[in-house]
Image 1 (tube, rainbow, N blue to C red):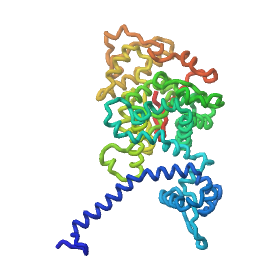
Image 2: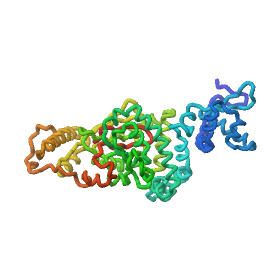
Image 3: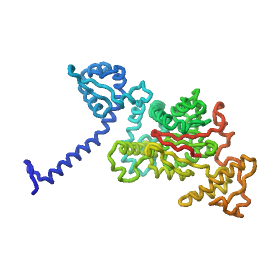
Image 4: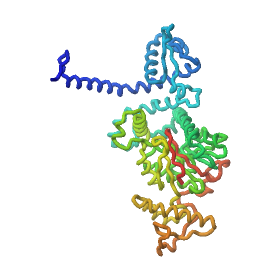
Length: 480
């Protein structure tokens, strides 16, 4: 028999009412979740973590108000702000038995990332991401979805220009944006060098950070591996601050037109077609794998392969989803799953993809110089065949042929035309008997001399490593 409570509501109705109340509360949490972000921004602007850090012990509210120059008329409002920040895990509060007012201390999060004197300080990143320049475009997201125009992102629709065009025309935001990116790169650089430094960078003679911003990652690598000459390749207004840097050279240019062998940094800022263009340019710019050439991609690999993954309610999944939508709204890019990255690598001539030890943190891909110095006709014909399911067979031929061509060139002889495809012992087609393999760079690829002329005098010479890095930490070593 169905029960009825004292208000006359039946059991099923009571359950339905409870679900409605929970749903209403959940909706409110989503609606007001931006308050958490703005409270964090306020804390960073006020320097709350710095004041508590200098005090070196829990700081009473009255002292905190004085140190921050907050008038007593706003004490109650500030107490409520601190209560929210405590709930968010950014600060801790306590009340001594002999004290009536609360005292505040740092938590591991604020102690590590919000104290400006710490190397891992993320305050500039907080202020950049929550800058009105990046926040305001969200108000036109629905208009962007339904717009018949062609702006690639909501940011472009709101500002009338892309994010990178705006940074070039807005010196103040450009400085803040570069500081924010450098703050996040600082933390990531430490993780990269600590966990993968020797495996990835040891022994490299040279490295270029393509799209490397203000050079924080390149500088960290140069400091850790002084035998490696490092350069940063980015837009002129970005690398201008690097002029005169004693350890890292600055090269101004556009990664879509030419990539000097070095590090390219935020692939999630670009759509699939642009990523393929960047990777192909990187591939052209470095020597073969056997000679030490590699492209290192530092990029996110999401675990969101299907709807079941999306429905998982944990912080990691939410972070990936939030950042994916943020990137799509700010620039014409996205975060990619393992399958999506495989597709990118295949389109760029990548041989294979292998996930690293932490599946959703690091990705390692390995590639061979598939066509080496094979002549243009031979290369073009085989590029058309580099599609599944025939790709493994073509790669097998390409690896064998590339090694044969390099061996011939090292021995000072002209390479012989090889079989049309498949196993190396297959008969040579008479139709290929008149083909020759050129030893000059292919069309569109700058010669070594042309590349040298584009570099400052003190970094002339062939670079052997290109890095594609981002706000997250993923690797594609040995891509040549």
